[in-house]
Length: 133
Image (cartoon, rainbow, N blue to C red; front, side):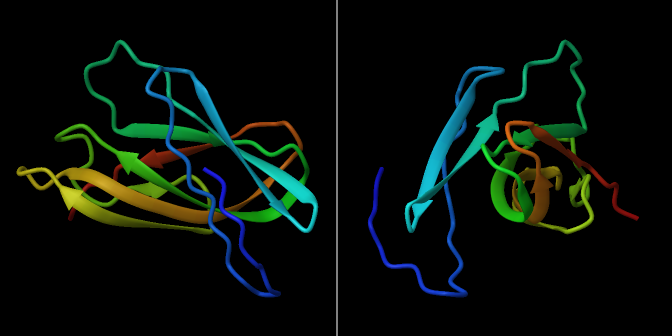
């Protein structure tokens, strides 16, 4: 989907895309502002043979070097995997639980943060479950 709009200094711009339904597949979106383009990509995590997984990960990629690039992604968890609140493997992050399963574990969460990216080098970020005290 393409939407043209005006961007002013200090505006926040969001790039939203739906991850692929196939394990290991990558989906990308390109944002162009003032003739400068940046590509944002997400890769669907490959399936595992383990029946229990409390760590989910995703990768961010950019065609150019970026310092403290902002991102927001949606996370989905299996019932019982994350009884508390997920935490990302980077310091500048925030995770908001949007919905829980009937056992109280996390079903959907929104994760946001800032991360420095090297050109064409995927940065993998893990979301790990923290148990309630």
